[in-house]
Image (cartoon, rainbow, N blue to C red):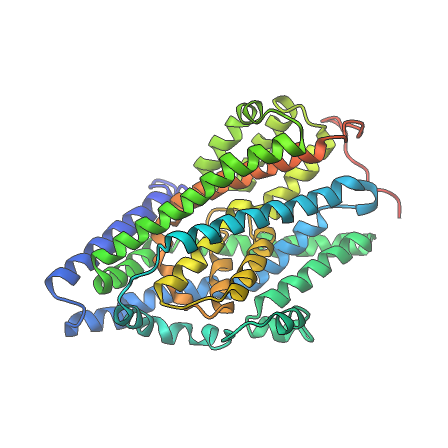
Length: 440
């Protein structure tokens, strides 16, 4: 996706400018006037605070249709499971396994290095108080504790519309998974039309998300002004620690886990593999979009990795939405970082819940820049972490988005390489041939 405005700067540069302006203004206020000055309280309560909350509410408003449609389409695009046979189930199984490893690495890094710990509880409480009113409708539904028995019972919604209205994101995602599987199994002209409608919902929602994201520079400036005015230099230290832990976890997954999966699962040289995918990695890093990188990834799979074309097209197309290891890792790191920042202790059971939702979130997240932010917001609600805390990481999200997209695209190519092993006898569809759907 091209995020460059006509006649202006690219959106990520505008977001960086908003980050710097908001941070600089907030730091100046913190040093010169202090957070308790009456005019500072008035500005943060009536101007910058509400402006930032409007941006977050717009994200919250779109999260249910975005996740439902993206997850249904991601599952439905697997096609006829019977005809795909081993390839379909290997893709699904490997997606879950490798995504689980990614999230475990991220959660372990946050627990070991504690990047969000040590913030003054009074300052954190002051930040929460500023955004509490704007997030009340969302945070009041957050569970106080999570128990395994009740957790698995709550996975199945008795009424999916009630679950959606109460922002119970996990039951909605489970329903979307079942709905997508149903579309695959009940193949008919009617279900094809239904899938087209859901794809249309996804396109509309993604378009609206892109429109909302264009407000991000202004929202970031307002949110960072509030945060810096309250926290001062302490905020900079915590953000640097957060970025270091997130990138460190991604590097471990990229250069330890992926080479092992390629070597063990595909019996290929990891060095040759990475040499073959340099171009899609660069495109992924520069665009921060799995969808935008898909044509380049398909070309690399065909010309550099010499993968069977039908397998590569299936795995990479589904993977652009459904196999996002970097996104799942980032979501886990962000949730635990914010929990530490706000002095909220998450039990091992709650962290397991975070891991499960992150894996599903990796399947249901749109492959576009900032597509994971709505998912992060909803996971925060699920485990009782203040949803307005997402404003903390907005300013550094573009760089992390570039990193996790590179991890996502590399993971798609790893998956295609492993699934292709033993599938070389699959017929290749020529460029000028149009695949014909099986008769029903």
